[in-house]
Image (cartoon, rainbow, N blue to C red; front, side):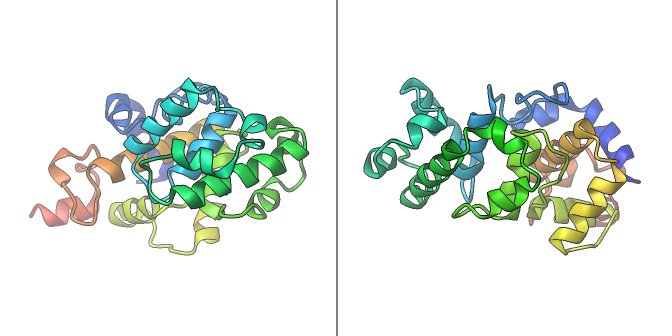
Amino acid sequence: MNLRELNKIFEKNKNFLEKAKWYISDPLSFKWWGNAENAEEVFISAILVQRSKWETVERILKKLKKKRLINLKKLAKIEYDKLEEILKPIGLRKVKAARIINSARKITEINGLERLREYKNVRKFLLSLEGIGKETADSIMLFALNIPTFPVSNYVKRVLNRMGITSETSYEKLRNKIVRELNKDLYELKLLYAGITSVGRIACKREPICKICILKETCKFSNFSLI
């Protein structure tokens, strides 16, 4: 089993991915990320989802859309306490409100996400923003800016390890390995992340539910645990 073979399974199980709010689309579409409509929505939700459930993030996004605040220029000007109130009941709302506003200001200063995409070192810029670590930066790059990279989440490490594909745990080594093996193909990279995250959310938890997993027929961990 290699990464492209794994993607073939995900391709055949689009309904499973949609249950976890991942929507297979064309390589440049924002729809992949929870049916997002634009890059700014992906950016904002990538911060909101830190240590939070996607279902909670969805409720917050609806509130932001109703107030027409899926807009970094507007968020750059909003008061901290006002955004904090809108972010209820998400966890760490004060921290996340500050991260969103401060990031929005920095990105607005350089004339937006489209301008950021033209930077020679986009990742360095994103990592310089308060509260944005490697996983969030790579998520924004891949799904908002359509730049070939790969977010290495705990789901990614767990699923690939249990599948017997790799036991690598170093963030950068695993990210580089995946990007290299998929030849920087945007579609393949997005599909792999969406598929692995779906499996992780629904079945491949710390205490896995192997019987409902779409990978159970080829997973070494599943085959061993079901003996």
